[in-house]
Every structure is written in C-alpha cells, then in structure tokens.
Image 1 (tube, one colour):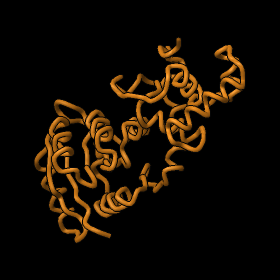
Image 2 (cartoon, one colour):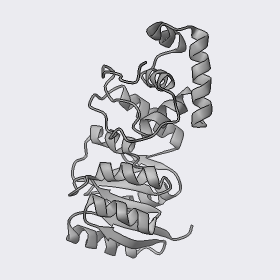
Image 3 (cartoon, one colour):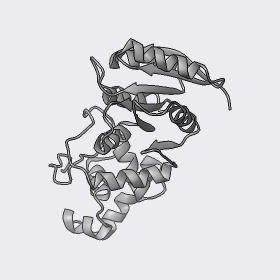
Length: 234
C-alpha cells in the first residue's frame, strides 16, 4: 500500500497537533495539511487533494457536515472521516448522507482510527465500528432513511440529471414504494413508471433501484421526512 496523504480539520490546535504526531508515526501515513474551520477545510481540499480528511463536526464558518458535502461534490475521491464529541446514531446518518466514509467519536482508540483511515482509503466504509462495503452501506443508509425524520440536509444547489417527474419517482422509490404503488400514487400507468425507472437507471449509471436510491440519498436530492412536501411535482 502506498502513502496515504491526510489533512486534519479541527478548530482546536492542540487536538490537531496530537493527531498529527500520532499519525506521522505510521510509515504509510503522512499529514500534508491542517485546517481550523470549515471554509479552510474546503480550501485545503482544493489545494492539496489529499486521500483522507479527518473532519470535526463543530467547526466555525462552515460546519463539518457542510464542508464534507462541498468537498465531496467537487472532489469525490477524497475520503472523509468524521470525528466528533457526540456519538449519536442520527448524526452518523447525517454524516454518511453528507458523503463521509466513516464516523468516530473523538475518544476513539488510536489503533482503531488508523485502521479506519486505511479502510476508507481502500474504498470501504466504517460505521459503528463495523467495516462495510459500498453495497452494505447502501442498505444501511436506506434503513436509516426510513427510521429518522428531519429536514433536508442539502442546500438546494446540487444539480441532478433527472427531470422533475423522474426525480419525483426516484423519491418515491427511496421511500420504499413499488412500481405499482408509484403508479397509483401519481395516477399514471405501470408501464409509464417502468419507463421512467429505466431512464433513471440509465442517467445515473446504476444497475438497480437500490443503487439509484442510495445515489440520491448520498447527493442530498431527497428530503429526510417521508411526509415532507415534495416541490418537484409538475
């Protein structure tokens, strides 16, 4: 395995310094930059394009989840590990939706954090201390979507290749509706729904409905509440 380039993001210099020393002791890890707020984190991502960023949630100017979303929009290859003082399941869900590959409380054991950095660099995900593949993460994400309420995490500025009707159908897919249920809900034919689903899969470059739903969730296209007003209908 080659060298893993890391940027540490935290508003406490002492915490950044401690992480820097711990990580630098590993032969395959190199801290290439630091940031003290969310805006600086985005700038560092752009300038350095590291392999992994360790990101605090409670940051000045731009919080860690907002910074994560912006970084993942522009640099999807950067893997982000969220570190926070609050180990809360719902916040883990929000972090994954924002694009994080892993989530740990700040008191995580050093060896576990180092292992996580290597796992996310290899393309895997770490949630609740469990290493997941992309497909496993998708199933976890869909389950949590149907469990938690809340408002839209996204800022409404993200582009989708889908039409308004396709987006409407995709949101119903994420909510767990079958093609028959979607047809009844929208007052259109079952075949029309199937045609839209085929177009959605083609535009998103995914193989099935589950992958399409996860794609939408990870990009902030879908409201969290199942009873949220859908403004995309024509």
